Image (cartoon, rainbow, N blue to C red; front, side, top):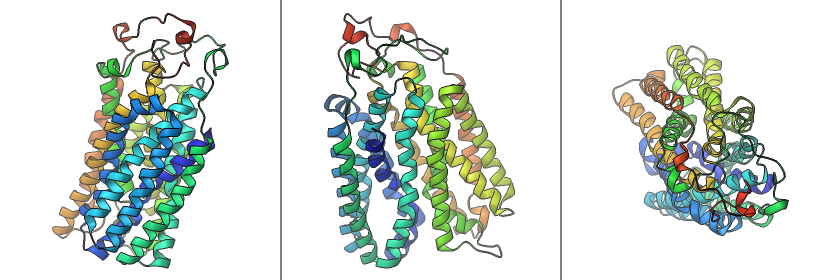
Length: 438
């Protein structure tokens, strides 16, 4: 099952390498930094919306159906974007990559996660980390591959179009492997964990079940919504603009950052993003979700403060702090499905997770908008170097403080939101299919 999940997430994780396309698109089509971020922002918005509205369909139709829909939409989005680049119609790039591809992102994101939780009920943090690690690592492949394709095929409109075309066809083949491999675990007596007695080993881990509808009525859901939104906003602001940001930051120094070095920086952040997803989510199985989120949000604010105060004085410090921030960003994504399972049980956790990803949609707009709008305004005022980003870094610190406070407010879910005790042995199993009638 992990290879099936990774085949989907390694593909759709290409979204994190979008910053490699920003400079060529800005040059070829005369776009601003804010405009060139629009396909990425819209893709993240559609990811959250399609996950929220499609979560119930994923539970009902199964992971194979969901992965097939994801493969079709994600690959078709590249093909439409290729047509837009070739004809210099930027709205087609936005429609293809942002809207159509974004639907593929959302449906493909949640289906492997909920499936792996069913296969590995004892280690939900590790299980979700395995799947979501692929999403973070997708840019590790896509960033150098995109840069190489653009170098070979050209950075003009036709070269960008051919690059989109090649990537769309390659991802279609790769994602099909996951569609063919995926399986649901057996149910009943043969289900994973069926012969173990479920116990709540920590205060925030429940043995009860909460439906997706009731979860939306709890303060815990909305506290986690704020936690995820602020953590994602802080990370995605760097990730979306990683390549031009590192070049701008050290443009006044004696050793400016080259295009290839900037692409390497994107790859390094992708590696940190990927490793953070498996390392921090596995750590949460031992330390607890609330403690790990304290680390993400508290230490994340400290990393931003160090970058803002150091400026361009130390390139290694900038790289290390950015890598740590991206590890927390990835870890937050990988840990939140297990956090939801702790609070709401396994009954409809896939649908609950999909609804929570609307926080990602919001952050996908806020993060790039804050960083790009501030940088564009500061550049218009004649500023260069770190001054382009210092204000946005302090905004991120404030958001992380808000997220830290929201995490502190998380408490066990009140019993009035729990599902009634099941009436049969099948429903009594903690690994019964999510969405099954109680």
